[in-house]
Each structure stands twice: as structure tokens, then as C-alpha cells.
Image (tube, rainbow, N blue to C red; front, side, top):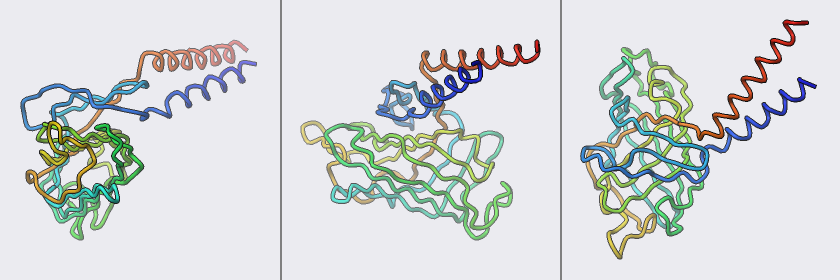
Length: 240
């Protein structure tokens, strides 16, 4: 009986934790600095807090583009730099590929269909970080998008990250990417998020910043119930 209860709790916990990405929206806060004016993302499953002063990876961003016809946002560049978590290395020959499909639906988040980020070292690797030549450093899948109107860093994505090398793992399980393409979607009455095609422009760099997920109270309570159930099960087995 107890085994069935634990299995049920585990299944419920898995279901509750899985859809953490549905409908996340940016939480606005004026930083007045060199980062987008948001503090994180939020949805019914919890909050994602951007650590603007934490670990970050920087990549040149002048080659980015968005097509309103194909709904594809694309950035491909040949360098990156990383700092944070006790590890720091400068720009190296590399391959950073960011492709996300977001359809215009009248909202700043748009209709995010899918996409992929791949960060791969160049032929020489990054010896000081233990990264071999042509080695993939991490891949990431998009969770949510934001097309901001007046913010100079007005193209943002929230990504879930899978690391294939520990050198940049201090970025955490989630990252927020910000791109500097002010005015890309128009302003005021002409503001049309994900509704305009554009190519290039903006500043020199874009950034991936570490982002922490804070579960909602109900999820935390469910985790506590699951832990309590496991503790009870172990105690019962010990008594036997």
C-alpha cells in the first residue's frame, strides 16, 4: 500500500514539475544599467529570476536577424567569452548558433514554436577551461520570448540549458539571453512585436545570464509531502 502511495506521489510530483515553462512572461523592473529592464520571468508554476550581476556568457550580436515571413530569429557568430563561477576566459574562435521560431500573435511573447542554441568551441578549443577543439559546450531550448518596445535590450529569450562540458555550468539550468536591437518592433502606435523583419543593427554584444527558478508554494508543498512520504517509508522499513 505504501509503495503505491509513494509511486502516486512521485507521479504527481513529476507532472507538477514538468510544465514549468507554460506561458512565462517577463517581470518588469527598471535597472537603469546595461541590462534589460526586467527582473525575471513568471508563470503559474513559479518564477525565474535573472541574476544580472552573476555569471554570464557574451557573444557578438551584429549578425542577428528576424524574418516575419518565416518567423525565424537567427544569430550565428564566431566568438564568445565567459565569466563567473570562478572561471573566466576571453574570446576564442567558436561557433554560437541561436535559432528560434516565434510567430506574431499580438503579444510581446508571441507564439514560440521551438528552436535551439548550440555553443561550440573553435578548432583550438579553450585550453584554460579544458575545452577541446570543436567541442560542444552547451545546448539550450527556448522556453519563452519577449519583444520589448522601448527597452534598448528589447529581444529576450528564456532558455533551459543542457551542459556537455562543466566549464560554463555555473550559468545554471536556465539562462536569459538579451539582444540589443532597440526599435526593432516599432514604437507607440506602430509597435508590432514579432511583426517586422529586420537584419543586424544594435550594439556589439549580446549576453546569456544565469537565471534561477523559484517554484510556486504549491509545488514546494508537494515536494515536502513527497520527502515526508519517503522518510516515513524508510522508517517503517527500519522498524521491520
